[in-house]
Length: 167
Image 1 (cartoon, one colour):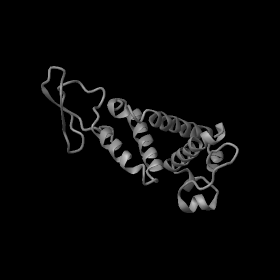
Image 2: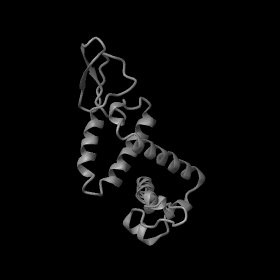
Image 3: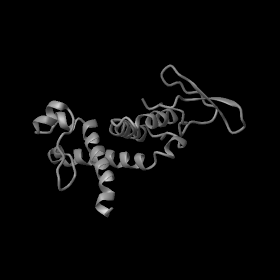
Image 4: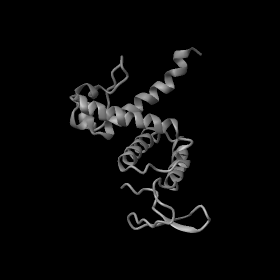
């Protein structure tokens, strides 16, 4: 097997993640001039040379920067899939929202294959159970209608926020 054949699955996954990132930002349905993309509401056309969704050429520089930031977060989350459930959620609301968008993109992209679904469901359950960073121990925070419980460093039960406080 040659090096180029080895990289084909990674390249296909990269193209899929880029297309789903564009979908998350509603680029195909709002900006793309390709009829198939516009009608489907998702990216249907990938440029051969750059392996990018065709609709990215219509983005303004600040829109392209937002796309690149989200794609960088998607790649980061995808690289850290194994350790991410053990890390607390970001305390910064913007970072938290960016990470949740990246998780949603990864689930949409990789969940299309039936063999990935059980692993993704288990991963999502682990993500929902992770603690939130930046909350003082023993502090009670209500998010929605749920209050999660945990223990502080002395083993005492304390109330912590639910795993998704940034929504």
